[in-house]
Length: 66
Image 1 (cartoon, helix red, strand yellow):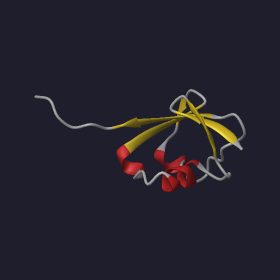
Image 2 (tube, helix red, strand yellow):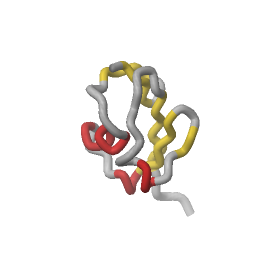
Image 3 (cartoon, helix red, strand yellow):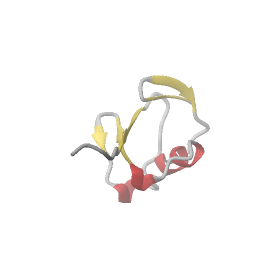
């Protein structure tokens, strides 16, 4: 199925948001995830299934500054 991840279309073979994170080697504690303009609670990553046409945004936590 086709989904959009951070604005780019890509093929995803289905599953949950956590499955998508695993395929991209992204640690769940290092990112906030938004699906179709709704920020997901970390507790729902493994239970939120992605569907054809979903828009997923990854917001990465960055250190630094003063």
